[in-house]
Image (cartoon, rainbow, N blue to C red):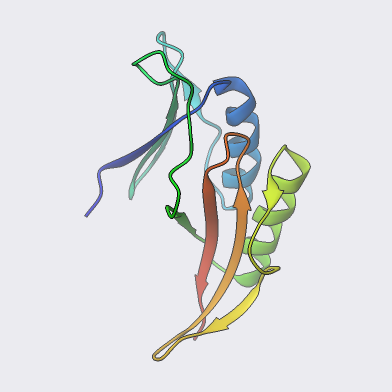
Length: 126
């Protein structure tokens, strides 16, 4: 469904350090920075990118928005969360753990990145 997701970041290199650590914990290679100062993480399932806003205004997070990254296990989600906290992220929502819905059980871990974007690592439990 998605080809890419791009987030605004006032300090792309600070955000790159955060996402190199968190996405690295999920097995994603470090981001590459292009000649325009944008950072790209390319995977088989799509592209995640960081950029200073092109309108020149400060980056801001979307209120009510969350971007979820797939985790292969609860341990991977925990490693992602720990890497985020160690690299400028802040905890939000409940601590990492199992959440049960009507039809499924999920292991979720939530953070805010250095620009305030709400992100999560998600593992679908068997």
